[in-house]
Image (cartoon, rainbow, N blue to C red):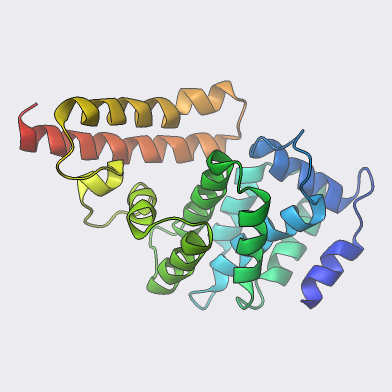
Length: 231
């Protein structure tokens, strides 16, 4: 695609826009020292998916762009260049599947990082408080490319989207799961998604806020289930 040609033409030399952008994204996702991943291709895929998701409902909203910027904590003097790249990618939603496949291939052996990227996309999509039908379809296709089952996609989605949701889907468990196993799953999700854990890793405030949002949904689902089961 033409915009990717322009993106790569920026170069990846030390201190370049691409270099800083790549470092910000890789640092946030814990990829600083990961080898075997094409830095330019990986960075382009994250920017492209975020930008194309922001335009898929017909209009790229400023709040979605701001959410992307806060999430990856760019250097202030690079903001203008990064906005230019984001808006360039957001001109046309077509072709996002190829970027999703790029990420799936590069992160296939790190499902935790793949989940982080997917949750970041959901955070961008729901930044305006609404997940539009076109955004839901976009994310559903990305989920398929990431080899997520429909049930797993709904479970991740339910932690971000404020619509009627099955509490069991939020926790990602079957409705007939035994109480002890259910409690263990809940505790695991709380431990994994607690904002203090994100803060302890030095993650940007945007990702700490994302953890708070997920934890609230997990706790609400657990409260509903405990009422139903009289636990």
